[in-house]
Length: 63
Image (cartoon, rainbow, N blue to C red; front, top):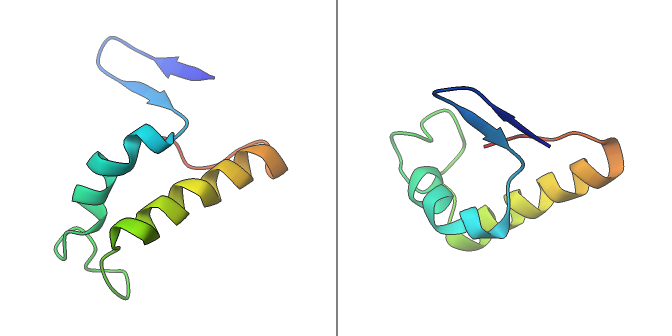
């Protein structure tokens, strides 16, 4: 499912989002309220965690 307006697109995460998400999730300033920034593997695991949530619960975080 995709939600789209003139200025915004919301959609489920995919593994193709790994690199752009890694740039955000590895930034210490962006991740100041997390125990530590994510490395590339942790970012991949986070995307996969959302895939499990989509499948198991019918919802998860969107991009």
